[in-house]
Length: 223
Image 1 (cartoon, rainbow, N blue to C red):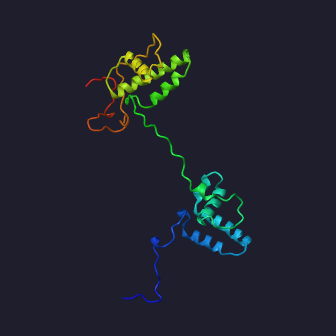
Image 2: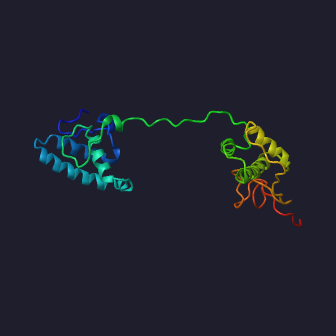
């Protein structure tokens, strides 16, 4: 059956112009195109101001941004494909700047020499290596050693000698950080234990996890 001449033609999104800023909808785009057709510049500017007010109502989230009024005018020019001759209260956006890609964030691809300590340990060692000899440097080494011992116990064994941690500090720093003679770490309680990341200590137990979940060992009680 052929469609009659008076039937309404349906348009699909794939058949119409792609919206440059979908959050404002196609109605705003139609308004902008009508503004372009106004011959008088003063009237074009007046209508542009009205459209900006409509855009503010359609996109209230813009208020969370700094200089949101300027953002709205920038969006107006973007919707118009930068082809809109009106008097804007703000400098017109430049397509090359708006469409430019941000500088890529450099990624550290250097292999981690000791995964159980993490990559940040190496950065901390670099910081300590630049610190002059003295009480501050010794305190930093001691604090780092305590943290490294904790990480070691999480991922490896139940016990570890302080000397092992000290040797790792000197090895990972390439000899730039020497542990002072006689440095001692605080003693660990006999009933202390550490859990690996991801273990829920306060929630319901997992399979075979007991009351506090796997990886937790508190004080020994009566069975």
